[in-house]
Length: 321
Image (cartoon, rainbow, N blue to C red; front, side):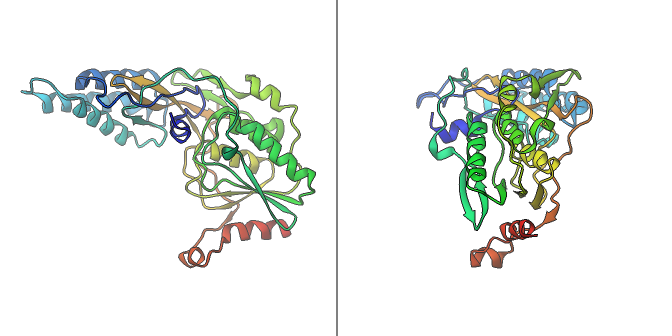
């Protein structure tokens, strides 16, 4: 499967699952609507831990009754009708971390490979200020690559660091928390609380967290750029940078900061990605829903037409002060 599709299908973090592309041109045989819908319903009832967790059973029951009515008199209720019913429930939940990936079979994760050089963070300079750009997704290996680029900025005498997260939609949870530890040290933690209320993920117990404790930390002035396209793991990195004293510049983030997603197989074959845990720093108090900037700034149409970047300009002004 091509790398950009693999990135787009990577799980946020409780479990990173490698997903293979669809089968041959003929495709797998279609699935009965009720087999598909009931499989999705079982997963939602067992694992969904999003903000409207208490409404899941009602929504599923009502939509299944509607599906029965729509299929009455049909010799076979089609897979497309089952998909439409699943889509209706998920739309009612309104959870940005919970969605189906139709026609995407799920395979066991492959062994980690070296990070593609094209997916590494970039570094450019505005005078003595280092500006780091991030790829479109936090791949496996991104935490170590983030550390290396921050180390290069420090070694070259950067007087400030700007981390541009405006187009970052998230990625593998361990990787963005490892990057966050470069900015915020051991204050970084995340405990994922599942549907039952029990912790099902604890960052500080992971092997990657143990290794990241030995990494050097950025200790100079820090600004993080965010936008409504900054989501999920991108929001976590911005949040912990802000907690470490960094200044966040831009517009409020998308609002997926306090939930974690996981992928589950559906018949078809397809994948159901759903919110499986609430993100907390301590197992009790949830993280905020989104990151609020310390300094609001956003591009106007005239800025875009003129090739200006007022958000970066505002960040550089913060560092000059």
